[in-house]
Image (cartoon, rainbow, N blue to C red; front, side):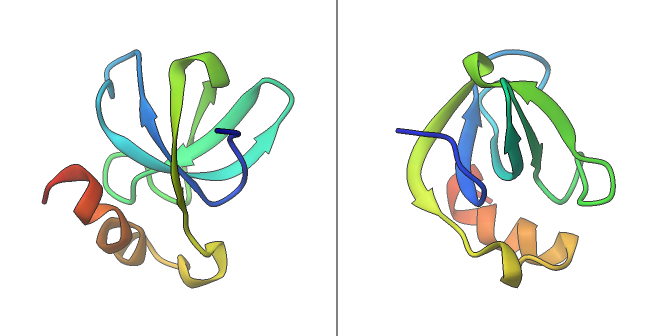
Length: 80
């Protein structure tokens, strides 16, 4: 699965291993990801593609205009 803008991804490495995020930007070999809690929309995490595992789910970025909306969209993935 290709990592594109709006894609839900799972971190394979780092402190955030096994957590789900949404991709805000995808360029070069890096993606900017956020989860609305630890990594907010204002300060996303920059992570290499090789440390991410893409899921088949793609969210509408236009509807994710607040951190609360991001957390709500990812709640089913993170088991919250």
